[in-house]
Image (cartoon, rainbow, N blue to C red; front, side, top):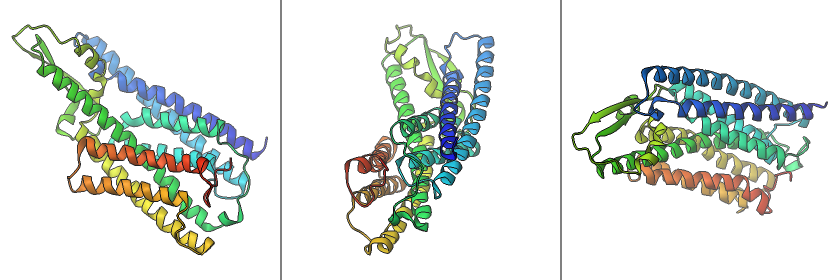
Length: 349
């Protein structure tokens, strides 16, 4: 077995580990107290807490195993190719998903946001699966234009920025889900007078300060009027595991911080790309499709950060800009490489 084949086996092992971790993170998320019915007994609550703690511990261990496997896969890929292992779409996917997982672990250990583990590992698994089945190419050298130290700097920063943007996008999607849940619950509560109205608060998240993985608290408030409950409540309660998440404002702040870090890196991507272009082709800017879409990504995220920092756009409107920016990023990575011919057509396909 060659070193390149060893790398491929390690990537398959990584994808399997992330898939298992995603399942465990999902079990941990949906089995919190916020997802329990109000008729749940104390014994059932304790059982749920034990299951949740066990699933989280297992998920942490499995995702860390996946990180080690993926790091080994990246190193062996670089050895097999004799260069930095991020010169085509497959390798960009391999390293980008690695950065996303590492960024998730750093933020999770720092702020306790383990609830983003399921979507982040799910995205990493999906990208690795597509990379292995659709974008995989033989480990080989690169064309002369890429034989430069700028490959390590420029593309390495781009991969890192894309991975961190992924974590910011996940936080934003969860912000939108939690906000939609809160709005639906408030609307249903306003349209009825039930015998018992459930008030769901995710620990101190209602105050916007919860960063840990503490289970939610379910408080029951007695109301005298005994009007029947709105049928739509059944649909709302199916999603009440979202109450285990921090408040939308807390998720928004976290997403803003993560995207700010990624934006700084992406700014360096544009700067180093221009310098490399002048060195390789004699011009800083050539309106190449990859250059244009990289700039579009920068503009969208710059608009988001400016609008959010000045409080002109907050909440859902700012979140939609994050989604738009990430969509542009994915198109820049996939669509531009596959649909356009240019100086950056290095997909290897």
